Image (tube, rainbow over all chains, first blue to last red; front, side, top):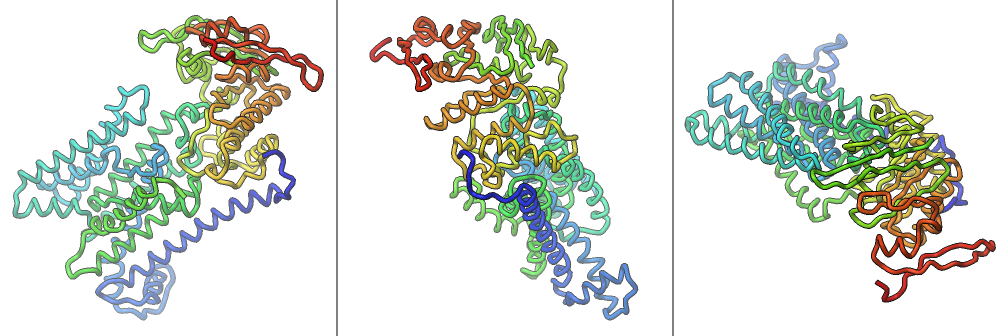
Length: 352
Length: 262
């Protein structure tokens, strides 16, 4: 414990090795994501070779001789591209939200819907379908109700002065179950021939109906919410400590939490608004991210983003090819996520 | 830097925890805060750290009240070392110590080369530099406590407040941590730590402050404060205060329980 006589590497070497190891792992995960992204264009009922995929993508930037058919280009850019981008964005958003929530609630078993945003967004969509809104209206209603649910949970938790985080979780669970009950009520009174199946299918989560116009809305919204989280990435580490401990290290815990919860709620609600409920991603992926690069948010955030994006792209590929009629992606993520969660419980929720 | 508590009173609802507390601590001194469970030790710390706002009175540093200071301004002056607990996430020792640098960073910054150098210096000072890349759950309780002390050093605050640092450590680590704190005081820090062990205060303290029934019961040197009468009144047990001469020929005092005494 006292000064160890054993030779230790010089300071700069130590610093360099630590930073480089985690930095290069994040870079490696970035490459994995790029590979998943490109290969996914090849997957589907209409075969396109990976070489052609790269050529078509490059031809948007450089003038290349056309060795592919017009049909290939349409399938790639109009059918598959929006879906792959959406899968990447939603996978990244849910994983980043999950990482941040597990950190600020100091609990690796927490998922981003703990404060009721998914239940709220689900109700918003069901309400939109029930009233007969168009596609954009449904998404917007879903997004707004997701935000509203979390704001209500935050407002309800103000009364818990002694343990604000426990109060927030309890309020979130309460608000979430209220919205779930409201969704069930809408299903009960909805027209069973077309509204009820629409609501049910929407709640299962699917990327089948994604169009480029959705991506154009989704991308800036998510960017707006992700940038502040990335900027405060170092300070997020301090929120994983005790309340008094974090305060005495010199951060304004209340303000930092408020910004964090607002940004993660926007990420989650925007995801649910375009894809429906996709569970488990936000719970499971952060564990892989921490295994790869450790809990420091300087590395955990980008790692979560890349792993989450790659994971949802791959699961969506499976959803596209598994059966003759498409399997909702929310079902597939549950098939992967639930057994993993059981594994976590059996290990006592501990990190390795 | 002096820290003064001037006439602080604090109540949770109708339950009055602190009544008109008044004292001043000076740099270079290791002061022990003694008091039975529920005597308000933690509440006093919370008021001094600015986590609780007292209903009356104020805390000041060199005569300047801390009331208007931002969390970062306070963190530049006062460091807090909590009791060790099982960490939820496995941060490395270096990352944990770097968290102490946050108050010195800009809002959107991450640790600079300078911050990393200061963190290594703090680890070096406590003799645990070789643990820098270890995970927090791979090290012993004593080492975890040293990491928290290193974090407080990296924070570069003059005043260090410590909540029962010895409560979950084995005997050897208890004495090791206390002598580290003693040596920090010799470097000019002001350390104020709570303890349930009067013998520790006797052996290591420069000053002892006894909090009892919400008031400062006694404040002075260990020999003045730790007496049979004080222990009997505050803890309702009987002890003898023994004298012995240490290897250096210095007369020392020791708190010894009397068996069957009550």
